[in-house]
Image 1 (cartoon, rainbow, N blue to C red):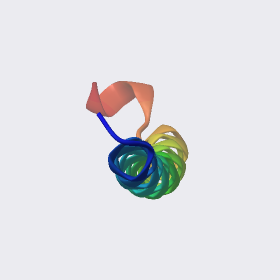
Image 2: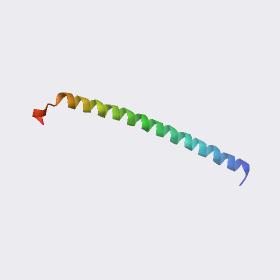
Image 3: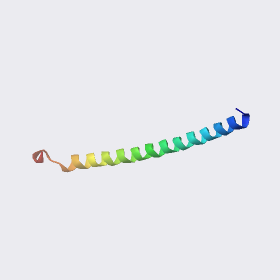
Length: 54
C-alpha cells in the first residue's frame, strides 16, 4: 500500500468520524429536548391531576 493510499484512507476515516460525531451530537440534542418536554408534561400532569380523579 502506498503512502498516498494510506493517507487517503486516513482522511476518509477522519471525515467519517467527524460525520458520526455530528450525528451523535444532533441525537443528544434531540434527546435533551425530548427529555425536557417529558419533564414539562410530567409537571403539568402532576399539577392538574387531583387524587380524586385517580
